[in-house]
Image 1 (tube, helix red, strand yellow):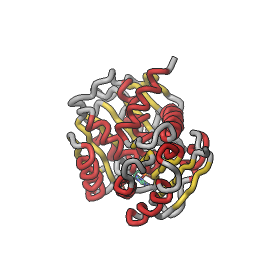
Image 2 (cartoon, rainbow, N blue to C red; image 1 turned 90 degrees about the vertical axis):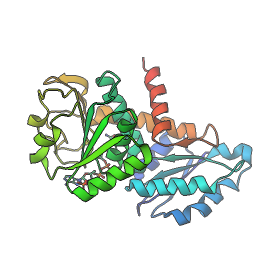
Image 3 (tube, rainbow, N blue to C red; image 1 turned 180 degrees about the vertical axis):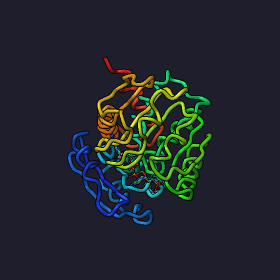
Length: 291
Ligand SMILES: NC(=O)c1ccc[n+]([C@@H]2O[C@H](COP(=O)([O-])OP(=O)(O)OC[C@H]3O[C@@H](n4cnc5c(N)ncnc54)[C@H](OP(=O)(O)O)[C@@H]3O)[C@@H](O)[C@H]2O)c1
């Protein structure tokens, strides 16, 4: 039976990236819908659950994406409400690569920090986008003292509230208008992740190199100029200036592997829900398999 993936995207144009990875992860067909609102989800999901018998429903799954994390969470909630036993299909949320990218970045940074970040300050620069918000949640869940930066105080506070509502823990937001403010913002951090947009350098080298107490720095921006000056895309746990560094392609390689593995898992059963925590479980399994 053909493996069908329903792609529901909160953005107007359904993500091509997500669609390509869906095929590479094992979907035979991807049905893509953009600009989806929560009120439209139920009938689209009904199209999945009432067309195949319960024992065949593992061959249909739903992937939720889009540029807005809160909108993605609302779509996932609507999809969870629409399904009921035995008419369930597996669901995955990964708005803008939020979960898979954040899980990959956090897993590598945890390794670099020796595995335990309880009570340690984690600074997430430009942490208000989907990737930053999910990374903040994963670090908060691991017991870190999380600080996210935003150019604007109100956007930072909205993101902080989103993280706290979903994950709890200790999360604060501070304003960092631009890279010239990075030295101040980075003070006191043990781990630093740049989650800013493609092609914007937000952390100059002087803000992280040989800074007392700073152990790990990571960047998910793969487009020059890179987000953290001096951290190269392929850095994968290399120590520079006294700090363990992870670049965007080192993180991206794990992210893509993880994203594909998650798509494959959606088709193994009909009741899986892949969100931050369950995607982190898949990452742990993948990393344990690594030779
Ligand atoms: N390596 C990988 O595998 C991988 C996978 C997926 C995504 N990514 C990358 O991950 C990063 C984060 O993705 P995302 O979708 O979460 O990011 P995003 O939403 O595009 O941006 C994150 C935040 O950056 C701030 N920002 C936007 N434009 C800015 C500018 N010109 N200068 C300074 N700050 C700016 C905004 O926060 P405020 O308005 O609150 O300041 C925004 O909320 C991107 O670089 C993306 O390319 C990497």
